[in-house]
Each structure stands twice: as structure tokens, then as C-alpha cells.
Image (cartoon, rainbow, N blue to C red; front, side, top):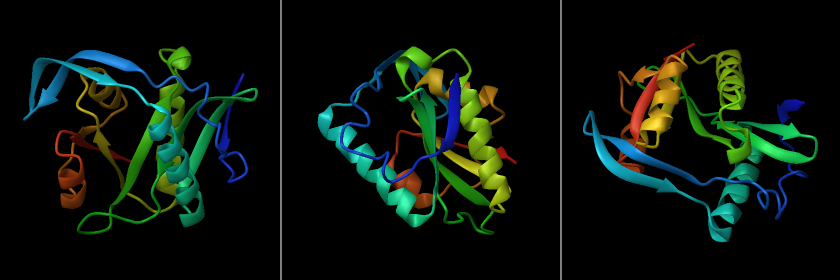
Length: 172
């Protein structure tokens, strides 16, 4: 049984992602508002895993929502919702990350993590969740299925940081 709960600094250790399978391939991406045939591949090497663990630790320290989905002692997935409001009226909290390890995809874990992220953002006063999604059609389709639509306000520094991302929002 999967348990979703806040991640602790103690759990954020060096080997946290050793058994986490991030690999994903898609044959279509969203580019300039259109779905195009282009291979999109994502994988995490050891350096990327170290960077993700570092980001998890930093976000826990900053007071962001960092939730982990545990299958016993195995990390099945996680999400991060930043604590700083974004947007012209401070209406957004940013979904920094939502990841499910490959063996746990397609079984509702991503939906559970997304719902948890929305609940946490709403509890912190956000009106909307901002999602800067990879352009992979599978990823964009997931967020659309969860109720996300193209963002009505683009957060410029996020657009500049990830120019290929698909920027969406979910009304809470």
C-alpha cells in the first residue's frame, strides 16, 4: 500500500533515488501550441539524481510542500509545491516537480500526488496551481486529464528558465 506523507530531511539522503526509475520516452511533443512528431526522452543520471536530492532538501528547508509516496521503504514518487506565491495577484503556487517511478506509472499514483499538491496549495491560500510541464505529450495529457489548462498568465522567469515547457494552470 502506498503512503503519501511529508518527506523529511532525514529521508533525503544520498541514495534516495538509487532505485527510482525516471526514464520516459514519448514520440510527440507540444511546440508553439501544436503537437508535433519529435522524440522526447528523459532520464536521470547519477549527477541529476544528486541535484534532485539537493533540491528536495532545499525545498524542505524553505518550507515548500515536499510530499513523498512510499511503498514500504521504496520511494514510489514525490511532488514539490513551492511556498512563494507567483503571479500578478499572488494567485499561484508553483508545482515544481511531480515524479512517479516507472513501475508505479499508470496505476493512479500521479493522480494521488497531483491531488495532494492541489490540496496543499489550496490550504496555503493559492487560487491556482502553476505547472511548467515538460513538452512531452504524455505529460501534458496527464495534466490536462487532471484539469489543467494553458496558463492565463505566464511567469516570465519560468518561461525563460524552461523555454520548451508547456505552461499550464489548475484552478483550485
